[in-house]
Amino acid sequence: MARLRVINLGLPKSGTTTLGVALRASGLKVADWKVRKFQSANPEVARHFLGDLMYRGYFETGDPLHWLDEFDALSEINVVGGDLNRWPQTDWGLLSAIIERHPGAKFILSYREAEAQADSMIRWTNLGRKRLKMFDVPGLPGRYGREPGDLVRWIDGHNRFCRQVFAGNPNFLEYDILDEAAPQKIGAFLGLPIRWWGKVNDNPADEAAEAAVAGTDSQDE
Image 1 (tube, rainbow, N blue to C red):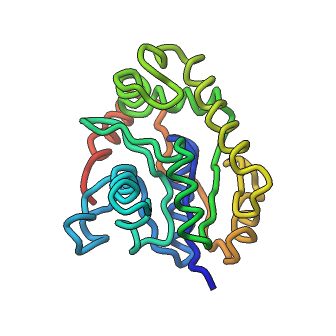
Image 2 (cartoon, helix red, strand yellow):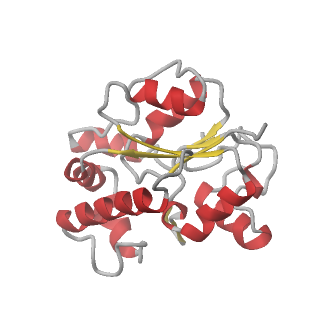
């Protein structure tokens, strides 16, 4: 029986952390955005970002999950900031390599209403106000991303991309993070009971609270 691997294709602020917590509570070993120092004894893996590790594996070995064999599930795989700009969920070559090499892989698209997601990105630390504008992000190149409408179009385009390339694939599930039946749908899709569901990593409404979150955003937990 092929090993279950779970890859979330959702963009930032689409409930990726909530999904990661839920999968961890349900018995899977989960990496979210970055491999924390306590999650791996391998110095090539610990404290490295998932998006960068996936591209390293893809180009060095042909297997995007080569450096992530310790983990069952990856809940947010992109990284943007510093000198890194990695968006594996937008790269069909990389995603198809996972499909070919890991027949037990399941792909999930967590999504929410695009206007609300764009607003959350803008208010989350400096993601929408600075980082997305500094890089040529796939689907959001150069000077684009300065207006909320740019982000809405980008988010909608990414969701359409995922639906198109995985159309008819039984190993693909999409869910709205506001759907009360989401945990049941995810559990049925993965073949395991989802033992927790809630809301984490919420976007604070006021700047003071957001600044406090920003101070811990890049900490090595």
